[in-house]
Length: 122
Image 1 (cartoon, helix red, strand yellow):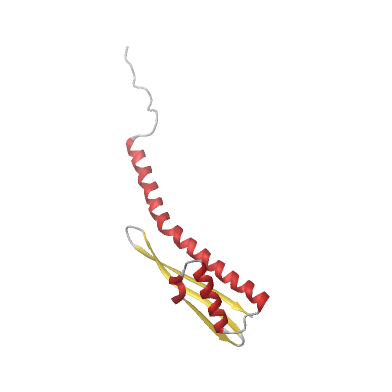
Image 2: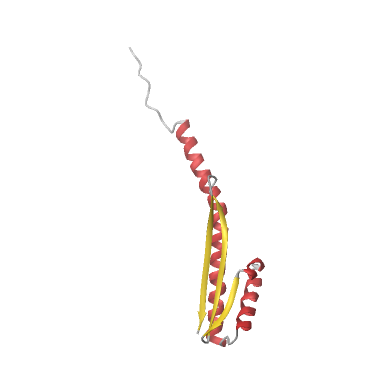
């Protein structure tokens, strides 16, 4: 009698290879993006702390706000961000702005990621 081959069990080598490539690419992107996300969340935390300090202690001057931000950046070990923020006072309101760029290498091109966060103290 003719023996017909049994149906294949499991994935083929091509499917396994494709899945490994997709997984590897996702890990490659994640290794770059996760630190950027953590950095952005840390900046949010710094701005939240400055806002909370303003509510309790009432930050009055630009220098006081700048000093507070620099201290918080040092506590978070983000000294490289001290050049990426600006503190201005207009119409009695203090505005703190973080503005910086990071690169995300997608293998086929490099994507510029722009981050801008602003806090206005009344």
